[in-house]
Image 1 (cartoon, rainbow, N blue to C red):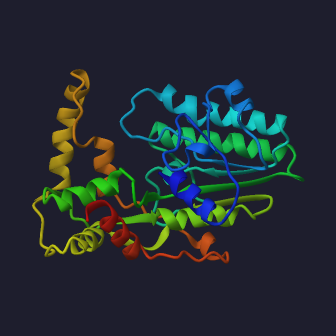
Image 2: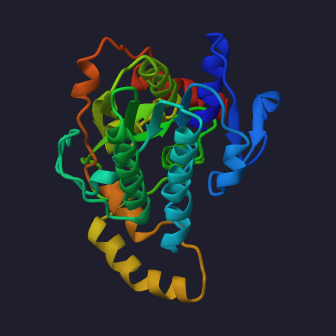
Image 3: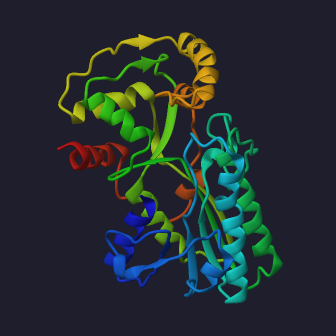
Length: 306
């Protein structure tokens, strides 16, 4: 998702690139080299150039085996860094995640304590440590930028925000909780512009990426609803404690019989909690996002549903 938008922007800017992935890109098949970051020899035969933009990751919420996350997100990163050393590649841009903070206090910034609550966040944090160790070994000639994006939405994404849009579009949305909790989100084209902006950074940099201002869940729902030309109205609401109690009972049974529930306890907590992060460090740079959150939602709704 992010990679395709990134490649389109690189192509528009006439910046030469190659894609290393498990399957061919629909948009840039001639630019794709098939390789697997879990296979060191596969990478040795495919990685070339001066800069690695490392986007590869297992990131879904519904994988129960810790090893699956760590095999790609950690060992895959280790393999990339080995090839960088072998081929004297000195610059890496890595997309991590705000998941490394876990359920952090509001407006967590890059100095805040990391405390991931799931395997995805743990594996991303471990990958960050590998990258920092790689950088510190010879930081006179190396450049490393780590970007921790928040929830990213946009055209062709099928994550939680798209599912929220879809449920509102189909008029099947049920509100859980008050909706007054705050969410930090980001539009994919702004994130891609920042990744390209970071290619000129020297030495070590660490950034959260969020598009401001932050919105409450109710504010977010209102913007989406109005983009469908629906009248914004109160939705049928289930109190958080009732939904939580039901899932506490149902989830162990569903796991036992291998039944996939429409929502998990982790997703419930994520939806109903405040996940707000600081973007002050990005604001201190000369980077200026092209799109507001409202405009990003408008473009996404038009593309996906009209």
